[in-house]
Amino acid sequence: MDKGLKSNLQKFIDDIEPKIIKIDGPDYYVSQSQITINPELLIIGINPAGDKKLSESIHCCKKPENIIYDSNQYLENPDWHISKKLNFIFSGNNARKIYEKSVIINYIAFNTHSESDLKSSNFKEMVEDCKTFSDNLIYNVIKPKKILILGPSLANLMNIKFHHLKDSILRTKNEKSYLVINIKHKDIPHYLIFHPSTPQLNSGENLKMKRDFFETLFS
Image (cartoon, rainbow, N blue to C red; front, side):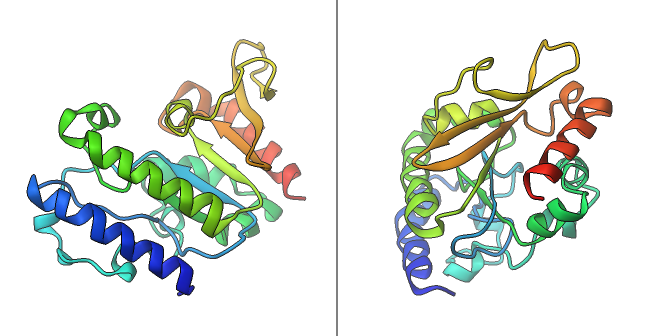
């Protein structure tokens, strides 16, 4: 593991874990893939879904290697709902090669039953800690060439501003909604799509259009 990465992960553990233990709070992990430096693509989700507590984890006092995975969990778990959508979007020959080596992280490391739970007063300080940690991890440690953001609510949490019309580079056939937003933030191209759990914009022709877009992007 890269020394700078390991140091950042350990600092995060030292900061966040006592706060979670104090409230008998949720389990946490930073990535859903290996973490490499300067990858072609970084995929960011808002946070893991689930109700498991840290006290129920086999790694209650975690080390850096306990909060990252060593392979793409969407490919390892193709039956997950999110996996089915993203694996299809990146099913083209060129896009799949990038996807297999992409880095996937949770912007907020700890799990919640639903995204709205992140607004709980119990989690306010922990959310801010995760934001500070993740921003540093993304832009000062990982330094990806391109970033894919899963959902507009995550973009808002990251304080990334976008316009649904002028920043859209792929729209539905009827032009009523964007499918892909492109903005440059901190000199890195960021691509925003609706979260894969949004059914209408992640099915049928809309999903095929996104697959074709990312295949062309990485060709």
